Image (cartoon, rainbow, N blue to C red; front, side, top):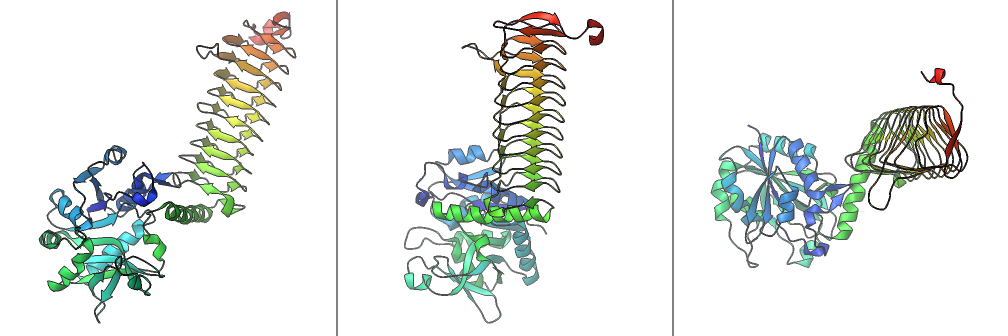
Length: 451
């Protein structure tokens, strides 16, 4: 028997977040809370179905490819399960979890499932001894360790101050029993149907209810406010850093290093203080990143070095060197051995092997060949006020300092420009162009050598 199904309850309004964005779409380490929960469910071998409220169109759109059930009106967690029962299998096991518990791990769900089977339980819940005060329900056990009921503490501040084992809101349940039990859940004084009434129903049926007690209650914490979101993110980021360090990545100052959940990093890469890696960034082996570098959705090849720069949507081959103080923008591709020094900006351009861009340069919408030397202060004037225009610089070109290339323009193979040249027309291969506007004045590479 396998827990091939799972319900994620995500119909809560999240009013304490004080946000127009649905609570479960707030992010931790670059990933929406609901996605972290879905990943945990899938990691435990189950297929998720998400219960949402009537007005949660943005959540349904975000969950493209994940089945959803609408709870209308939302009348509590027990009612959410009642609404979802028709789409679940008739028998077997299912997980039930909340969409605002982003720290829950697949490993924990599998351990709950194992205990569930060992005890022959119809319901197994996740619990922990949560330091008071806490509004989580109190787990009451019989002398044999089975759970008899959950005592809600929200109406009673005294119970919230009690030191006790508390329910964290994740469950493994026998579906055939749930189909008989869920319709018996009744509205309480608040008008809602509570899922936490299930253990008492099971005890009344003479069924076993087990509890898997976590050593660290923070894994099961729910996120209902901005301060809880910040606390959960800090814990998740600590997990991420630890995972990378165990996999062979050096973090010189872990506390100042921020790594999103979707980032991958190769062995023997070193992250210096203040490094931020976001989105789907992929770092190869043996790289040095930082200090104070920010990379977003960027691919970095092995043995590259990036110092104090911002890269977004770029691709780097092996042994590329960048920085400090550079901005490498979306659509840029840097071939092996490219060397970019301080205060250079590159946008939507491709640079060939061994090309050097040194000091205070801007290259936009350019195709640059191999072994090109881009002198300090070089600029591609790629925008004519209406559209972006292309610049092509062929292999082996030498651009003098403060060269301005007015696109569209092509600089031929092994051509040169003089300092301060304003190039408005194509320069033939092997020629030297100087002046404002630049004109070719002599051949610097014999035609025979260009063959």
